[in-house]
Image (tube, rainbow, N blue to C red):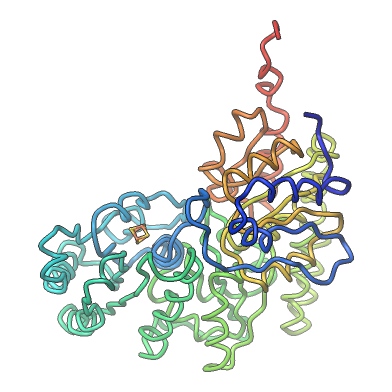
Length: 480
Ligand code: SF4
């Protein structure tokens, strides 16, 4: 089949996909697919709804959103995967949220710590086991600064009271113990897990007025939140913010400490990268402590410059002048060198994205900076406000898909044959077998960082390596 383009054939392909379903599924999936044009003001997607059973969705669960995303990266906290062994084992060190420290001594990010439920725990309840476990873990890892209890599916179903255990053990070990009701049956995706985890931080950190380490306050204190430091992303974002003259008092939750989480409420401005996963806590801190928050995007030069200026606007002339100075003297020339080297190798290529709740829109300008057009994009667990924000990033006809499944992915690849696909591990190998270059856009394919200046250099190199790899010329045997 020859390659179709989204502009001319988007609607036709959408109809072909829907025709492959039974009536009920068709009715449901109709609300999840749309073809939008640059001047559209509304996206027709009805997001954040249940998955149709049996369609091979790419979504995860609330536990993944709470433990895997929000809590797991907090480095000096013991995170208990509370329930049977599976969830903690499969999510063990699978997300590349880098953190400083010595593993097992003062950093527990890459460990699997679980209550390993057996039948008797299901029948008699696991609260006693959990209490013993928290005390034991505190003795084994004395440098920990707190404990989180991340509920897996059975906990809520058998009626355990992890909040009571948290209150009691916090007194025994004299450290914060935070319960999180993120059982995988709650909600429809990872997204509710983010919300529940934000609420746990609200109730057990800020409402309890937990204090972080003391620091000398300045008018330039900011908290960098919703950056999980994948492959060191938050570190390369910090470099820009510090160059601008800002003082980062808290970074969360990538490479975060319990003290930094507590100190987030002391910042003058909260800078939020991942809106989807941490807007809840930003709204709360604004309401309760009057701290303004600002969304920004550090993927690729266009957005980095725009974001630097937008952030500087929140401060005085000193920061604004310093920002203009470093953009002109350092960042413009350095970014230009990267574009000059890689754009000629990538110009005119077309990319399809399918990621979680932020990157399907946030990375579009970085691709465009390199001459690559994103013609298809979609989210696993975004809400309608994310789709509204996506329209701001679109300047050509784009196929949008919410909660994509494997069948839809195959159909999209078959029809549009993108030059590059950016998605997750479950999608990687089937795409490569179809002869299409692929980059993982969750784990950065064990590369990164992709944020900031250093990140863009790695991003551009990686995309070039994928698209122009010699292997793609060898897919068809010479005798065919
Ligand atoms: S759905 Fe339940 S069992 Fe599956 S990973 Fe999530 S918490 Fe664990």
